[in-house]
Length: 311
Length: 311
Image 1 (cartoon, helix red, strand yellow):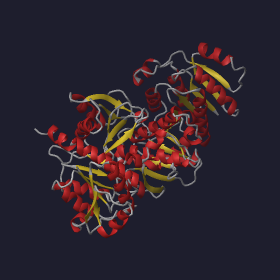
Image 2 (spheres, each protein chain N blue to C red):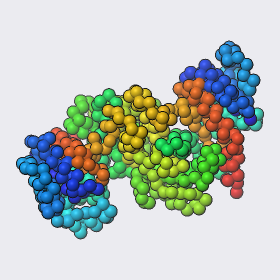
Image 3 (cartoon, one colour):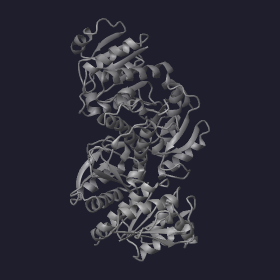
Image 4 (cartoon, chains in turn cyan, purple):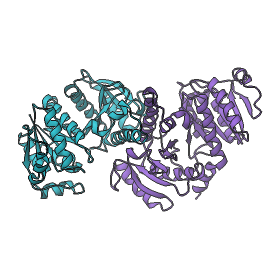
Protein backbone atom coordinates (compact mmCIF):
# COMPACT_ATOMS: atom_id res chain seq x y z
CA UNK A 1 0.00 0.00 0.00
CA UNK A 2 1.61 3.25 -1.15
CA UNK A 3 0.13 6.62 -0.30
CA UNK A 4 1.71 9.73 -1.76
CA UNK A 5 1.32 13.29 -0.59
CA UNK A 6 2.21 16.56 -2.23
CA UNK A 7 4.91 17.82 0.14
CA UNK A 8 4.85 21.31 -1.40
CA UNK A 9 1.10 21.99 -1.19
CA UNK A 10 -0.50 24.04 1.57
CA UNK A 11 0.12 27.24 3.47
CA UNK A 12 2.54 25.51 5.87
CA UNK A 13 4.31 23.32 3.32
CA UNK A 14 6.69 21.64 3.36
CA UNK A 15 7.15 21.70 7.18
CA UNK A 16 3.60 20.69 8.19
CA UNK A 17 3.35 18.12 5.41
CA UNK A 18 6.63 16.41 6.34
CA UNK A 19 5.64 16.36 10.00
CA UNK A 20 2.18 14.99 9.16
CA UNK A 21 3.67 12.34 6.89
CA UNK A 22 6.01 11.24 9.69
CA UNK A 23 3.07 10.99 12.10
CA UNK A 24 1.11 8.96 9.54
CA UNK A 25 4.07 6.69 8.74
CA UNK A 26 4.40 5.88 12.44
CA UNK A 27 0.66 5.36 12.83
CA UNK A 28 0.30 3.18 9.73
CA UNK A 29 3.36 0.92 9.78
CA UNK A 30 1.78 -1.29 7.10
CA UNK A 31 1.70 1.59 4.58
CA UNK A 32 4.48 3.18 2.57
CA UNK A 33 4.21 6.99 2.63
CA UNK A 34 5.72 8.96 -0.25
CA UNK A 35 6.54 12.65 0.03
CA UNK A 36 6.54 14.26 -3.42
CA UNK A 37 8.48 17.51 -3.76
CA UNK A 38 11.86 19.19 -3.64
CA UNK A 39 14.37 16.74 -2.21
CA UNK A 40 16.68 19.49 -0.92
CA UNK A 41 13.87 21.09 1.06
CA UNK A 42 12.26 17.91 2.34
CA UNK A 43 15.37 15.90 3.31
CA UNK A 44 16.63 18.31 6.02
CA UNK A 45 13.14 18.42 7.57
CA UNK A 46 12.91 14.65 7.46
CA UNK A 47 16.34 14.21 9.03
CA UNK A 48 15.07 15.82 12.21
CA UNK A 49 12.70 12.90 12.74
CA UNK A 50 15.33 10.15 12.67
CA UNK A 51 14.85 7.03 10.58
CA UNK A 52 11.29 6.38 9.44
CA UNK A 53 11.61 3.23 7.34
CA UNK A 54 8.22 3.43 5.60
CA UNK A 55 8.64 7.02 4.44
CA UNK A 56 10.45 8.10 1.29
CA UNK A 57 10.91 11.14 -0.89
CA UNK A 58 10.01 11.31 -4.59
CA UNK A 59 11.80 14.30 -6.03
CA UNK A 60 9.79 16.82 -8.03
CA UNK A 61 11.58 20.01 -8.87
CA UNK A 62 8.64 22.32 -9.60
CA UNK A 63 5.83 23.67 -7.44
CA UNK A 64 2.35 24.85 -8.45
CA UNK A 65 1.59 27.83 -6.26
CA UNK A 66 -1.80 28.49 -4.62
CA UNK A 67 -2.76 31.36 -6.91
CA UNK A 68 -1.85 29.77 -10.24
CA UNK A 69 -4.37 28.94 -12.95
CA UNK A 70 -4.91 25.17 -12.59
CA UNK A 71 -4.92 24.10 -16.24
CA UNK A 72 -2.09 26.38 -17.33
CA UNK A 73 0.06 25.49 -14.35
CA UNK A 74 -0.34 21.76 -14.93
CA UNK A 75 0.58 22.12 -18.60
CA UNK A 76 3.61 24.28 -17.90
CA UNK A 77 4.86 22.50 -14.79
CA UNK A 78 4.92 18.83 -15.67
CA UNK A 79 7.67 18.30 -13.11
CA UNK A 80 5.59 19.81 -10.32
CA UNK A 81 4.73 17.75 -7.25
CA UNK A 82 1.04 17.68 -8.24
CA UNK A 83 1.78 16.58 -11.82
CA UNK A 84 4.20 13.90 -10.61
CA UNK A 85 1.65 12.67 -8.08
CA UNK A 86 -1.02 12.19 -10.73
CA UNK A 87 1.53 10.58 -13.08
CA UNK A 88 2.29 7.99 -10.40
CA UNK A 89 -1.39 7.46 -9.63
CA UNK A 90 -2.27 7.05 -13.30
CA UNK A 91 0.52 4.48 -13.72
CA UNK A 92 -0.59 2.54 -10.63
CA UNK A 93 2.69 3.22 -8.80
CA UNK A 94 0.74 4.54 -5.82
CA UNK A 95 -2.67 3.67 -4.33
CA UNK A 96 -3.75 7.17 -3.36
CA UNK A 97 -2.63 10.76 -3.82
CA UNK A 98 -3.25 13.51 -1.25
CA UNK A 99 -2.63 17.23 -1.56
CA UNK A 100 -3.39 20.40 0.39
CA UNK A 101 -2.18 22.79 -2.28
CA UNK A 102 -3.97 24.45 -5.21
CA UNK A 103 -7.42 22.78 -5.08
CA UNK A 104 -8.19 23.60 -8.70
CA UNK A 105 -4.94 21.98 -9.83
CA UNK A 106 -5.72 18.88 -7.76
CA UNK A 107 -9.19 18.68 -9.33
CA UNK A 108 -8.02 19.36 -12.89
CA UNK A 109 -5.04 17.04 -12.46
CA UNK A 110 -7.37 14.26 -11.36
CA UNK A 111 -9.85 14.76 -14.19
CA UNK A 112 -7.13 14.89 -16.86
CA UNK A 113 -4.92 12.06 -15.60
CA UNK A 114 -6.85 9.24 -13.96
CA UNK A 115 -10.13 10.73 -15.23
CA UNK A 116 -13.70 10.22 -14.09
CA UNK A 117 -15.12 6.70 -14.17
CA UNK A 118 -17.23 6.12 -17.26
CA UNK A 119 -20.84 6.94 -16.51
CA UNK A 120 -20.05 9.48 -13.76
CA UNK A 121 -21.50 12.88 -14.66
CA UNK A 122 -19.58 15.09 -12.23
CA UNK A 123 -17.19 13.75 -9.57
CA UNK A 124 -18.17 15.30 -6.22
CA UNK A 125 -15.98 16.27 -3.28
CA UNK A 126 -17.18 14.69 -0.08
CA UNK A 127 -16.67 15.47 3.57
CA UNK A 128 -17.08 13.43 6.70
CA UNK A 129 -19.54 15.01 9.15
CA UNK A 130 -19.16 14.13 12.84
CA UNK A 131 -22.45 13.35 14.54
CA UNK A 132 -23.38 14.27 18.09
CA UNK A 133 -23.82 10.61 19.02
CA UNK A 134 -20.30 9.73 17.92
CA UNK A 135 -21.14 8.34 14.47
CA UNK A 136 -19.79 9.73 11.20
CA UNK A 137 -21.98 10.78 8.30
CA UNK A 138 -20.90 12.10 4.95
CA UNK A 139 -22.06 14.98 2.84
CA UNK A 140 -21.62 15.46 -0.89
CA UNK A 141 -20.98 17.54 -2.93
CA UNK A 142 -19.12 20.15 -0.87
CA UNK A 143 -17.86 22.32 -3.68
CA UNK A 144 -16.80 20.68 -6.92
CA UNK A 145 -20.11 21.27 -8.72
CA UNK A 146 -22.04 24.40 -7.84
CA UNK A 147 -24.64 23.86 -10.56
CA UNK A 148 -26.13 20.37 -10.44
CA UNK A 149 -28.98 18.92 -12.43
CA UNK A 150 -31.32 16.55 -10.57
CA UNK A 151 -29.69 13.50 -12.23
CA UNK A 152 -26.33 14.61 -10.83
CA UNK A 153 -27.75 14.79 -7.31
CA UNK A 154 -29.31 11.35 -7.78
CA UNK A 155 -25.90 10.00 -8.79
CA UNK A 156 -24.32 11.57 -5.70
CA UNK A 157 -26.72 9.42 -3.69
CA UNK A 158 -25.30 6.27 -5.31
CA UNK A 159 -21.68 7.40 -4.86
CA UNK A 160 -22.34 8.30 -1.25
CA UNK A 161 -23.90 4.90 -0.58
CA UNK A 162 -20.85 3.08 -1.98
CA UNK A 163 -18.42 5.23 0.02
CA UNK A 164 -20.45 4.86 3.23
CA UNK A 165 -20.63 1.08 2.84
CA UNK A 166 -17.00 0.52 1.91
CA UNK A 167 -15.01 3.23 3.64
CA UNK A 168 -17.19 4.06 6.64
CA UNK A 169 -18.42 0.43 6.89
CA UNK A 170 -22.04 1.43 7.32
CA UNK A 171 -24.45 -1.31 6.25
CA UNK A 172 -27.43 -0.16 4.18
CA UNK A 173 -26.67 3.55 4.76
CA UNK A 174 -29.57 5.96 5.13
CA UNK A 175 -29.56 8.44 2.23
CA UNK A 176 -31.22 11.83 2.73
CA UNK A 177 -31.68 14.88 0.56
CA UNK A 178 -30.85 18.30 2.03
CA UNK A 179 -33.98 20.40 1.78
CA UNK A 180 -36.02 23.18 3.38
CA UNK A 181 -38.63 20.88 4.89
CA UNK A 182 -39.17 17.22 5.63
CA UNK A 183 -42.29 16.60 3.58
CA UNK A 184 -42.16 15.23 0.04
CA UNK A 185 -42.79 18.04 -2.44
CA UNK A 186 -40.77 20.61 -0.53
CA UNK A 187 -37.89 22.56 -2.01
CA UNK A 188 -36.72 24.10 -5.24
CA UNK A 189 -37.22 22.59 -8.69
CA UNK A 190 -33.83 20.87 -8.54
CA UNK A 191 -34.35 18.94 -5.31
CA UNK A 192 -38.02 18.14 -6.03
CA UNK A 193 -36.94 16.31 -9.17
CA UNK A 194 -33.91 14.80 -7.45
CA UNK A 195 -36.24 13.49 -4.74
CA UNK A 196 -38.22 11.55 -7.33
CA UNK A 197 -35.12 10.14 -8.99
CA UNK A 198 -33.57 8.99 -5.71
CA UNK A 199 -36.86 7.53 -4.54
CA UNK A 200 -37.20 5.52 -7.74
CA UNK A 201 -33.84 3.84 -7.20
CA UNK A 202 -34.71 0.78 -5.15
CA UNK A 203 -31.01 0.07 -4.43
CA UNK A 204 -31.00 3.09 -2.14
CA UNK A 205 -32.23 3.25 1.43
CA UNK A 206 -33.72 6.70 0.85
CA UNK A 207 -35.15 8.21 4.01
CA UNK A 208 -36.40 11.43 2.40
CA UNK A 209 -35.60 15.06 3.10
CA UNK A 210 -33.62 16.45 5.98
CA UNK A 211 -33.20 20.09 7.03
CA UNK A 212 -30.32 22.28 8.15
CA UNK A 213 -31.14 21.48 11.77
CA UNK A 214 -30.59 17.74 11.23
CA UNK A 215 -26.98 17.74 9.99
CA UNK A 216 -25.33 16.68 13.25
CA UNK A 217 -28.21 14.69 14.74
CA UNK A 218 -27.73 11.31 13.06
CA UNK A 219 -30.72 11.66 10.77
CA UNK A 220 -28.80 10.25 7.82
CA UNK A 221 -25.56 8.52 6.88
CA UNK A 222 -25.30 10.21 3.50
CA UNK A 223 -26.45 13.80 2.98
CA UNK A 224 -26.96 14.72 -0.68
CA UNK A 225 -26.81 18.32 -1.90
CA UNK A 226 -25.25 20.36 -4.66
CA UNK A 227 -21.75 21.78 -4.28
CA UNK A 228 -23.05 25.26 -3.52
CA UNK A 229 -25.24 24.25 -0.58
CA UNK A 230 -22.68 21.69 0.62
CA UNK A 231 -19.87 24.22 0.56
CA UNK A 232 -21.88 26.68 2.65
CA UNK A 233 -22.69 23.90 5.14
CA UNK A 234 -19.08 22.66 5.35
CA UNK A 235 -17.62 26.12 5.92
CA UNK A 236 -20.33 27.04 8.40
CA UNK A 237 -19.61 23.81 10.31
CA UNK A 238 -15.91 24.66 10.40
CA UNK A 239 -16.78 28.12 11.70
CA UNK A 240 -18.64 26.58 14.64
CA UNK A 241 -15.27 25.24 15.77
CA UNK A 242 -13.72 28.68 15.27
CA UNK A 243 -16.51 30.18 17.41
CA UNK A 244 -15.87 27.60 20.13
CA UNK A 245 -12.17 28.50 20.09
CA UNK A 246 -12.91 32.20 20.29
CA UNK A 247 -15.38 31.67 23.12
CA UNK A 248 -12.93 29.38 24.91
CA UNK A 249 -15.32 26.46 24.81
CA UNK A 250 -13.62 23.10 25.04
CA UNK A 251 -16.19 20.53 23.99
CA UNK A 252 -15.55 17.04 22.66
CA UNK A 253 -18.08 17.32 19.90
CA UNK A 254 -17.31 20.87 18.78
CA UNK A 255 -13.61 19.98 18.68
CA UNK A 256 -14.43 17.36 16.06
CA UNK A 257 -15.70 20.10 13.75
CA UNK A 258 -12.12 21.32 13.46
CA UNK A 259 -11.00 20.69 9.86
CA UNK A 260 -7.86 19.16 11.41
CA UNK A 261 -9.79 16.29 12.91
CA UNK A 262 -11.58 15.64 9.63
CA UNK A 263 -8.37 15.77 7.64
CA UNK A 264 -9.32 15.93 3.99
CA UNK A 265 -12.03 15.65 1.39
CA UNK A 266 -11.99 12.76 -1.09
CA UNK A 267 -13.03 13.27 -4.69
CA UNK A 268 -15.37 10.43 -5.62
CA UNK A 269 -16.05 8.83 -8.98
CA UNK A 270 -12.47 8.87 -10.25
CA UNK A 271 -10.31 5.98 -11.45
CA UNK A 272 -8.20 6.27 -8.34
CA UNK A 273 -8.12 7.67 -4.83
CA UNK A 274 -7.59 11.41 -4.54
CA UNK A 275 -7.98 13.44 -1.35
CA UNK A 276 -7.70 17.19 -1.14
CA UNK A 277 -6.86 19.02 2.05
CA UNK A 278 -7.45 22.45 3.50
CA UNK A 279 -4.88 25.07 2.48
CA UNK A 280 -4.13 25.74 6.13
CA UNK A 281 -3.54 22.04 6.85
CA UNK A 282 -1.48 21.35 9.96
CA UNK A 283 0.57 18.21 10.57
CA UNK A 284 -2.38 16.55 12.32
CA UNK A 285 -4.68 17.37 9.41
CA UNK A 286 -2.16 15.80 7.02
CA UNK A 287 -1.91 12.73 9.21
CA UNK A 288 -5.69 12.35 9.21
CA UNK A 289 -5.90 12.98 5.46
CA UNK A 290 -3.44 10.12 4.91
CA UNK A 291 -5.64 8.03 7.22
CA UNK A 292 -8.66 8.63 4.98
CA UNK A 293 -6.55 7.84 1.90
CA UNK A 294 -5.49 4.55 3.47
CA UNK A 295 -9.07 3.55 4.23
CA UNK A 296 -10.12 4.42 0.68
CA UNK A 297 -7.27 2.44 -0.82
CA UNK A 298 -7.85 -0.58 1.43
CA UNK A 299 -11.53 -0.67 0.60
CA UNK A 300 -10.81 -0.13 -3.09
CA UNK A 301 -13.80 2.15 -3.15
CA UNK A 302 -12.96 3.46 -6.62
CA UNK A 303 -13.18 -0.08 -8.04
CA UNK A 304 -16.46 -0.65 -6.22
CA UNK A 305 -17.80 2.49 -7.84
CA UNK A 306 -16.48 1.41 -11.24
CA UNK A 307 -18.20 -1.95 -10.92
CA UNK A 308 -21.45 -0.32 -9.91
CA UNK A 309 -21.42 1.78 -13.07
CA UNK A 310 -20.48 -1.03 -15.47
CA UNK A 311 -23.29 -1.49 -17.93
CA UNK B 1 -49.19 51.95 17.87
CA UNK B 2 -51.20 48.75 17.71
CA UNK B 3 -49.57 45.37 17.33
CA UNK B 4 -51.74 42.30 16.90
CA UNK B 5 -50.80 38.70 17.40
CA UNK B 6 -52.52 35.50 16.43
CA UNK B 7 -53.31 34.04 19.87
CA UNK B 8 -54.23 30.65 18.39
CA UNK B 9 -51.09 30.06 16.28
CA UNK B 10 -48.19 27.88 17.42
CA UNK B 11 -47.61 24.57 19.13
CA UNK B 12 -48.10 26.10 22.58
CA UNK B 13 -51.02 28.39 21.73
CA UNK B 14 -52.87 30.02 23.25
CA UNK B 15 -50.96 29.73 26.60
CA UNK B 16 -47.49 30.75 25.37
CA UNK B 17 -48.93 33.48 23.14
CA UNK B 18 -50.97 35.06 25.93
CA UNK B 19 -48.00 34.94 28.28
CA UNK B 20 -45.70 36.44 25.65
CA UNK B 21 -48.22 39.18 24.87
CA UNK B 22 -48.42 40.06 28.57
CA UNK B 23 -44.61 40.25 28.76
CA UNK B 24 -44.54 42.47 25.66
CA UNK B 25 -47.36 44.71 26.92
CA UNK B 26 -45.42 45.30 30.13
CA UNK B 27 -42.16 45.90 28.25
CA UNK B 28 -43.70 48.24 25.67
CA UNK B 29 -46.09 50.42 27.65
CA UNK B 30 -46.37 52.81 24.69
CA UNK B 31 -47.85 50.09 22.49
CA UNK B 32 -51.29 48.53 22.41
CA UNK B 33 -51.10 44.73 22.08
CA UNK B 34 -54.06 42.89 20.56
CA UNK B 35 -54.61 39.17 21.04
CA UNK B 36 -56.69 37.76 18.19
CA UNK B 37 -58.49 34.50 18.88
CA UNK B 38 -61.15 32.70 20.86
CA UNK B 39 -62.29 35.01 23.65
CA UNK B 40 -63.42 32.16 25.90
CA UNK B 41 -60.00 30.50 25.72
CA UNK B 42 -57.91 33.65 26.00
CA UNK B 43 -59.79 35.51 28.74
CA UNK B 44 -59.23 32.93 31.50
CA UNK B 45 -55.52 32.83 30.68
CA UNK B 46 -55.34 36.59 30.68
CA UNK B 47 -57.15 36.86 34.00
CA UNK B 48 -54.25 35.11 35.68
CA UNK B 49 -52.00 38.04 34.89
CA UNK B 50 -54.11 40.73 36.55
CA UNK B 51 -54.94 43.97 34.78
CA UNK B 52 -52.75 44.78 31.79
CA UNK B 53 -54.21 48.04 30.48
CA UNK B 54 -52.51 48.02 27.06
CA UNK B 55 -53.59 44.50 26.17
CA UNK B 56 -56.93 43.55 24.66
CA UNK B 57 -58.63 40.62 23.01
CA UNK B 58 -60.11 40.68 19.50
CA UNK B 59 -62.46 37.74 19.22
CA UNK B 60 -62.07 35.38 16.28
CA UNK B 61 -64.05 32.19 16.47
CA UNK B 62 -62.14 30.01 13.99
CA UNK B 63 -58.62 28.60 13.97
CA UNK B 64 -56.46 27.56 11.04
CA UNK B 65 -54.57 24.48 12.17
CA UNK B 66 -50.88 23.83 11.44
CA UNK B 67 -51.48 21.11 8.85
CA UNK B 68 -54.20 22.86 6.83
CA UNK B 69 -53.78 23.89 3.20
CA UNK B 70 -53.07 27.64 3.38
CA UNK B 71 -55.22 28.93 0.52
CA UNK B 72 -58.18 26.64 1.18
CA UNK B 73 -58.12 27.30 4.91
CA UNK B 74 -58.09 31.08 4.43
CA UNK B 75 -61.03 30.90 2.03
CA UNK B 76 -63.07 28.63 4.26
CA UNK B 77 -62.21 30.21 7.60
CA UNK B 78 -62.72 33.90 7.14
CA UNK B 79 -63.40 34.22 10.85
CA UNK B 80 -60.09 32.62 11.76
CA UNK B 81 -57.55 34.53 13.84
CA UNK B 82 -55.18 34.76 10.85
CA UNK B 83 -57.91 36.03 8.48
CA UNK B 84 -59.08 38.58 11.06
CA UNK B 85 -55.50 39.73 11.62
CA UNK B 86 -54.95 40.42 7.96
CA UNK B 87 -58.36 42.11 7.68
CA UNK B 88 -57.35 44.52 10.44
CA UNK B 89 -53.92 45.10 8.89
CA UNK B 90 -55.40 45.74 5.46
CA UNK B 91 -57.84 48.25 6.93
CA UNK B 92 -55.10 50.04 8.86
CA UNK B 93 -56.64 49.19 12.23
CA UNK B 94 -53.32 47.74 13.37
CA UNK B 95 -49.68 48.61 12.59
CA UNK B 96 -48.27 45.08 12.52
CA UNK B 97 -49.49 41.49 12.61
CA UNK B 98 -47.52 38.62 14.15
CA UNK B 99 -48.24 34.91 14.06
CA UNK B 100 -46.50 31.67 14.97
CA UNK B 101 -49.11 29.38 13.41
CA UNK B 102 -49.44 27.94 9.90
CA UNK B 103 -46.56 29.70 8.06
CA UNK B 104 -48.10 29.09 4.66
CA UNK B 105 -51.38 30.69 5.77
CA UNK B 106 -49.48 33.70 7.15
CA UNK B 107 -47.62 34.06 3.84
CA UNK B 108 -50.68 33.56 1.64
CA UNK B 109 -52.80 35.78 3.89
CA UNK B 110 -50.23 38.56 3.56
CA UNK B 111 -49.92 38.28 -0.21
CA UNK B 112 -53.72 38.21 -0.73
CA UNK B 113 -54.69 40.93 1.75
CA UNK B 114 -52.13 43.70 2.07
CA UNK B 115 -50.25 42.37 -0.98
CA UNK B 116 -46.70 42.89 -2.17
CA UNK B 117 -45.56 46.44 -2.87
CA UNK B 118 -45.68 47.24 -6.58
CA UNK B 119 -42.35 46.44 -8.17
CA UNK B 120 -41.40 43.74 -5.64
CA UNK B 121 -40.83 40.43 -7.42
CA UNK B 122 -40.95 38.04 -4.46
CA UNK B 123 -41.27 39.17 -0.83
CA UNK B 124 -38.51 37.46 1.17
CA UNK B 125 -38.53 36.28 4.78
CA UNK B 126 -35.62 37.71 6.73
CA UNK B 127 -33.89 36.71 9.91
CA UNK B 128 -31.66 38.58 12.31
CA UNK B 129 -28.25 36.93 12.72
CA UNK B 130 -26.33 37.59 15.96
CA UNK B 131 -22.65 38.33 15.38
CA UNK B 132 -19.81 37.23 17.64
CA UNK B 133 -18.84 40.84 18.32
CA UNK B 134 -22.32 41.73 19.57
CA UNK B 135 -23.68 43.32 16.40
CA UNK B 136 -26.73 42.09 14.50
CA UNK B 137 -26.72 41.25 10.81
CA UNK B 138 -29.61 40.10 8.69
CA UNK B 139 -29.98 37.34 6.15
CA UNK B 140 -32.55 37.07 3.38
CA UNK B 141 -34.32 35.09 2.02
CA UNK B 142 -34.63 32.34 4.63
CA UNK B 143 -37.35 30.32 3.01
CA UNK B 144 -40.12 32.12 1.13
CA UNK B 145 -38.55 31.68 -2.30
CA UNK B 146 -36.52 28.54 -2.92
CA UNK B 147 -36.06 29.29 -6.63
CA UNK B 148 -34.72 32.80 -7.22
CA UNK B 149 -33.60 34.42 -10.43
CA UNK B 150 -30.56 36.71 -10.19
CA UNK B 151 -32.80 39.82 -10.39
CA UNK B 152 -34.69 38.58 -7.34
CA UNK B 153 -31.46 38.23 -5.36
CA UNK B 154 -30.43 41.72 -6.49
CA UNK B 155 -33.74 43.05 -5.17
CA UNK B 156 -33.20 41.28 -1.85
CA UNK B 157 -30.03 43.36 -1.54
CA UNK B 158 -32.09 46.56 -1.82
CA UNK B 159 -34.75 45.34 0.63
CA UNK B 160 -32.07 44.26 3.08
CA UNK B 161 -30.37 47.64 2.88
CA UNK B 162 -33.62 49.48 3.68
CA UNK B 163 -34.42 47.17 6.61
CA UNK B 164 -30.87 47.39 8.00
CA UNK B 165 -30.91 51.19 7.79
CA UNK B 166 -34.36 51.72 9.23
CA UNK B 167 -34.99 48.89 11.65
CA UNK B 168 -31.46 47.96 12.73
CA UNK B 169 -30.25 51.58 12.40
CA UNK B 170 -27.09 50.62 10.52
CA UNK B 171 -25.76 53.47 8.38
CA UNK B 172 -24.63 52.48 4.88
CA UNK B 173 -24.95 48.76 5.59
CA UNK B 174 -22.43 46.38 4.02
CA UNK B 175 -24.21 44.06 1.58
CA UNK B 176 -22.63 40.69 0.79
CA UNK B 177 -23.60 37.77 -1.39
CA UNK B 178 -23.45 34.26 0.08
CA UNK B 179 -21.13 32.24 -2.11
CA UNK B 180 -18.59 29.41 -2.18
CA UNK B 181 -15.55 31.68 -2.41
CA UNK B 182 -14.61 35.30 -1.93
CA UNK B 183 -13.32 36.09 -5.40
CA UNK B 184 -15.52 37.64 -8.07
CA UNK B 185 -16.53 35.00 -10.60
CA UNK B 186 -17.06 32.27 -7.99
CA UNK B 187 -20.28 30.37 -7.58
CA UNK B 188 -23.17 28.98 -9.56
CA UNK B 189 -24.79 30.69 -12.53
CA UNK B 190 -27.42 32.33 -10.31
CA UNK B 191 -25.03 34.09 -7.92
CA UNK B 192 -22.51 35.01 -10.62
CA UNK B 193 -25.20 36.97 -12.41
CA UNK B 194 -26.60 38.35 -9.14
CA UNK B 195 -23.08 39.54 -8.28
CA UNK B 196 -22.99 41.66 -11.42
CA UNK B 197 -26.46 43.09 -10.83
CA UNK B 198 -25.74 44.04 -7.22
CA UNK B 199 -22.35 45.47 -8.15
CA UNK B 200 -23.96 47.68 -10.82
CA UNK B 201 -26.31 49.27 -8.28
CA UNK B 202 -24.35 52.23 -6.99
CA UNK B 203 -26.86 52.83 -4.17
CA UNK B 204 -25.57 49.69 -2.49
CA UNK B 205 -22.45 49.34 -0.37
CA UNK B 206 -21.66 45.97 -1.92
CA UNK B 207 -18.66 44.31 -0.33
CA UNK B 208 -18.66 41.20 -2.53
CA UNK B 209 -18.94 37.53 -1.70
CA UNK B 210 -18.83 35.93 1.71
CA UNK B 211 -18.61 32.25 2.59
CA UNK B 212 -20.29 29.93 5.07
CA UNK B 213 -17.47 30.55 7.54
CA UNK B 214 -18.17 34.30 7.65
CA UNK B 215 -21.80 34.29 8.79
CA UNK B 216 -21.16 35.14 12.46
CA UNK B 217 -17.93 37.10 12.04
CA UNK B 218 -19.26 40.56 11.18
CA UNK B 219 -18.23 40.39 7.54
CA UNK B 220 -21.52 41.94 6.39
CA UNK B 221 -24.65 43.65 7.67
CA UNK B 222 -26.91 42.14 5.02
CA UNK B 223 -26.33 38.61 3.72
CA UNK B 224 -28.13 37.91 0.43
CA UNK B 225 -29.03 34.38 -0.67
CA UNK B 226 -31.97 32.47 -2.07
CA UNK B 227 -34.58 30.97 0.24
CA UNK B 228 -33.13 27.48 -0.11
CA UNK B 229 -29.62 28.35 0.99
CA UNK B 230 -30.90 30.79 3.62
CA UNK B 231 -33.24 28.22 5.11
CA UNK B 232 -30.43 25.68 5.45
CA UNK B 233 -28.25 28.34 7.12
CA UNK B 234 -31.00 29.48 9.49
CA UNK B 235 -31.89 25.99 10.63
CA UNK B 236 -28.25 24.98 10.95
CA UNK B 237 -27.64 28.08 13.09
CA UNK B 238 -30.58 27.15 15.31
CA UNK B 239 -29.17 23.65 15.65
CA UNK B 240 -25.90 25.06 16.99
CA UNK B 241 -27.90 26.27 19.97
CA UNK B 242 -29.50 22.84 20.30
CA UNK B 243 -26.03 21.27 20.27
CA UNK B 244 -24.87 23.68 22.97
CA UNK B 245 -27.88 22.71 25.10
CA UNK B 246 -27.24 19.03 24.61
CA UNK B 247 -23.55 19.43 25.44
CA UNK B 248 -24.43 21.58 28.47
CA UNK B 249 -22.51 24.54 27.12
CA UNK B 250 -23.67 27.86 28.51
CA UNK B 251 -22.19 30.53 26.28
CA UNK B 252 -23.44 34.08 25.79
CA UNK B 253 -23.05 33.99 22.04
CA UNK B 254 -24.40 30.50 21.42
CA UNK B 255 -27.41 31.33 23.60
CA UNK B 256 -28.27 34.10 21.15
CA UNK B 257 -28.67 31.52 18.39
CA UNK B 258 -31.75 30.25 20.21
CA UNK B 259 -34.77 31.04 18.01
CA UNK B 260 -36.35 32.40 21.20
CA UNK B 261 -33.86 35.23 21.45
CA UNK B 262 -34.37 36.12 17.79
CA UNK B 263 -38.14 36.02 18.11
CA UNK B 264 -39.55 36.08 14.61
CA UNK B 265 -38.92 36.56 10.92
CA UNK B 266 -40.38 39.58 9.11
CA UNK B 267 -41.69 39.30 5.57
CA UNK B 268 -40.32 42.24 3.60
CA UNK B 269 -41.76 44.03 0.60
CA UNK B 270 -45.40 43.98 1.72
CA UNK B 271 -47.80 46.88 2.21
CA UNK B 272 -47.65 46.36 5.94
CA UNK B 273 -45.64 44.77 8.72
CA UNK B 274 -45.95 41.01 9.05
CA UNK B 275 -43.77 38.82 11.25
CA UNK B 276 -43.90 35.06 11.37
CA UNK B 277 -42.73 33.04 14.31
CA UNK B 278 -41.43 29.54 14.92
CA UNK B 279 -44.14 26.93 15.48
CA UNK B 280 -42.56 26.05 18.82
CA UNK B 281 -42.58 29.69 19.97
CA UNK B 282 -42.37 30.15 23.72
CA UNK B 283 -43.62 33.19 25.62
CA UNK B 284 -40.17 34.82 25.37
CA UNK B 285 -40.08 34.22 21.62
CA UNK B 286 -43.50 35.86 21.30
CA UNK B 287 -42.35 38.81 23.38
CA UNK B 288 -39.31 39.26 21.14
CA UNK B 289 -41.38 38.85 17.98
CA UNK B 290 -43.64 41.67 19.17
CA UNK B 291 -40.45 43.68 19.83
CA UNK B 292 -39.39 43.29 16.20
CA UNK B 293 -42.90 44.20 15.05
CA UNK B 294 -42.77 47.37 17.11
CA UNK B 295 -39.42 48.41 15.64
CA UNK B 296 -40.69 47.76 12.14
CA UNK B 297 -43.86 49.76 12.74
CA UNK B 298 -42.01 52.65 14.36
CA UNK B 299 -39.52 52.88 11.52
CA UNK B 300 -42.31 52.54 8.96
CA UNK B 301 -39.98 50.33 7.00
CA UNK B 302 -42.75 49.21 4.64
CA UNK B 303 -43.34 52.81 3.58
CA UNK B 304 -39.62 53.36 3.12
CA UNK B 305 -39.56 50.33 0.83
CA UNK B 306 -42.63 51.57 -1.03
CA UNK B 307 -41.00 54.96 -1.62
CA UNK B 308 -37.81 53.32 -2.83
CA UNK B 309 -39.76 51.41 -5.45
CA UNK B 310 -41.92 54.33 -6.66
CA UNK B 311 -41.12 54.98 -10.27
